[in-house]
Length: 247
Figure (cartoon, rainbow, N blue to C red):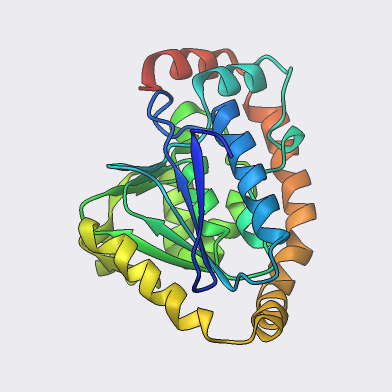
């Protein structure tokens, strides 16, 4: 692991992955990407594990792409698919719970949507903010956000790029569990404990079945998102929006 991502293996069969890049504020820094890949690689190699809890630090769950990454995509030297780490929670054989104890924006929200279960905080903000910068969503967001949070609400989030407090999402009927921020990680750990007494092979088989349709859809969705990026990401106004709105 790296300092930016810490992996803790419990004797109860639950792994905890903590994203805590305080310098980059839990954006997709190289250290976070490398740490997530290493953490989920180690989890996949441990046959004793039955569940994973993924969380951030303080008020940050995950903040999505870095300024440098967005500029590189705008300049045509990078595509989001070049480093396909964002679906690690779905590719993980065992169930993953996103304990979104802090803000989750853009790709950070999408990362949480690749988990099998989500716990959100009433006081924190969640938003698919891609269109705020003038470019269309990526990372499979156009599939995963409506699939996890509901079709109409997901479409609204993607199109408006608005940020929503967790309490607002609960009022809108979001299917995720929404609790006070200090209760998010304990609630996620309780969910993980309820999985840990199940046979691993049964958990693996059921997770594979539950995600089968999404996994079949995602390759075509990714290609469509890349095609939309070719139309939207390289406009001059996008660089100006990144420079002025990123923080």
